Each structure stands twice: as structure tokens, then as C-alpha cells.
Amino acid sequence: MQKIMTFFIGFMLLALPLALAENPTTYSGSCYDVNTDGFIDPLDHGMVLSYLGSTTKPEMDYNENGIVDSFDETAVEDAMDANVNNDKYVDPLDIGYVLARLGTNDPTADINGNGIVDTRDVRYVTKSVNICLR
Ligand SMILES: [Ca+2]
Ligand SMILES: [Ca+2]
Ligand SMILES: [Ca+2]
Image (cartoon, rainbow, N blue to C red; front, side):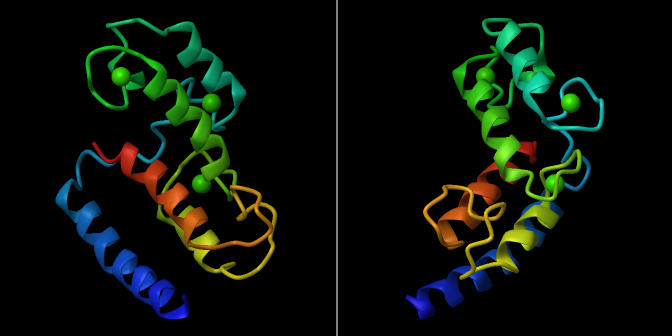
């Protein structure tokens, strides 16, 4: 398990800067702060909910399928948890926050609430970060 974890973290640290470098101009870590008030919170989730079905809100269409749908709503809901440092971005700093607490029971970093911070929590945050990479 330890070996797998070390490999995974090494892979992440390598892959993340590459992913960011690929799309340097389109990275928008604040993509979940829909109402641009500086917080990623239920208000943003509510805005996406209120535009479900809309085809004129590309900024809320995270999977870029032309419509604000349940994927987009879930993405913002997940981002509230993934934003572990509580700023207006879901970005590599949040991944670093969770990585730094691996093996602890830090409740903020233990996103799935299973009592330990592990690679599943890292993956959860990474997924949210990647959705902003567009
Ligand atoms: Ca907001
Ligand atoms: Ca969509
Ligand atoms: Ca954050």
C-alpha cells in the first residue's frame, strides 16, 4: 500500500504540472465561483441548479456538452468539499493541502469522511481541479 501510494503521489506531482502546462491560458481555478463573490459555496451551487437545462451559460457547462446538466451541478457540489483551503479556487494548492495530511484524520482533508486522509481524497480534489482545466 505504501509503495502504491508513493508511486501515485510521484505520478501526480509529475502529471499535474504537465497538465497545467498543456493549457496554460485556459486554466481557470476560480471556475466554480460562479457568482464571483470570492467564495465557492451553496450560492454557486444554487446558481447552477437554477440554470439546469440552460444552453446559454457556457461558464457553468463544465463538461462542455452544450447544456447545464447534472454533471455540472455535481461538479460544483464536489468543488465545495474539494476547496479544502476555503479560497475562491480549486487548484493545486488544495491538492497540496490534502497531500500534506496523508495518513492523518484531518477532517477537512478527509473529504469522503472515512476517518483517514488517503489517496481517494487526493483523487477527489484532483478530479475537481481537472474539471477547471479547460
Ligand atoms: Ca461564489
Ligand atoms: Ca454540461
Ligand atoms: Ca482552494
